[in-house]
Image 1 (cartoon, rainbow, N blue to C red):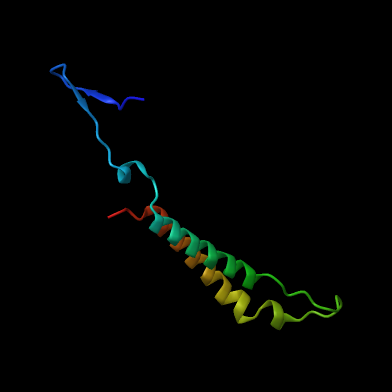
Image 2 (cartoon, one colour; image 1 turned 135 degrees about the vertical axis):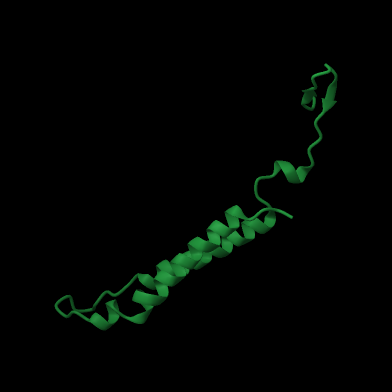
Length: 93
């Protein structure tokens, strides 16, 4: 397979040389940040889940409206999405 050639206005052909870094969309560092963001998102969704009562006739508002589900879990989810956006936008050095 030959490398692509660039035609210049003068009619000569020049080889286009690309380094491996230019052709890769994401680097290892990007994937590391994406994994960190996915873990933070998963933790946030895990903390938001639950709240099932052993007795369906009893409503326990402390289990549903506690700090963990109302404040901590949404902050982790938003933080996880911010980390994911950073991982996608981050450019290689």
